[in-house]
Image (cartoon, rainbow, N blue to C red):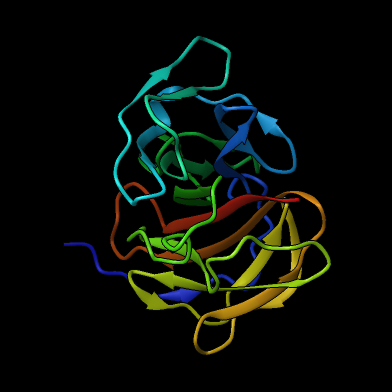
Amino acid sequence: MKKYLLISLLAWHCSVFAHDAWIEAEAEKYTVYYGHEKPEKYSAEKIKEIQVIDANNKAVPHKISSEAGKAVQIIPEGKPALFTLSFDNGFWTKNQQGKWENKPKSQVKKSIESSHALKFGKSIVLWNEFSHKPRGQRLEIVPLNASAPMANQAFAFQVFYDGEPLSKAVLTQNGKETKIVTDTQGKASLLLTTGKQRIGVEHRMPLIADSEADSLSLEANLWFVVE
């Protein structure tokens, strides 16, 4: 059985693990993106779960459209209010030349370091009484207010890891690291501007006696639009 030593990621500058996976809504088109500051190509097989929730907190039946070389599209059969995403970015290992390979360390000779990267996205497209309720993601950002955020105002939220508040977690905003860190209750706030917002957080844990990776990298994000 694997044992985990839990530590917060205060600074981890490897670009491989600074990537997010998230769902964007635009004119009733719902797209799964992967990337850092800009979307990049990805394998649809890395998407492990998508949930679509309506304004009554009920699951919405949906279909997935996946074409080679294109971002995955979600086609709901009803009106969505919220999406959740689970994305397994696989194992990443640094080789002797300092380059990262999308393989476990068992497949890379004389590896320097290795990590298993898991990503959790949550997108709010319609704010309602359920918007500030936790969805049970392993790493999750939860708004502290159910009302739609406004531009030039502070947006308060709380970060949870395995259902418990996560302190000392460094936040990102639209792919860029901020100087904002969660407090002892996992709470923090950010000033918002008009347009698309993607707030992110990372949490890293060493893996003990694991043959495939040295650490587990978790990343979560919360996406929404400020009018």
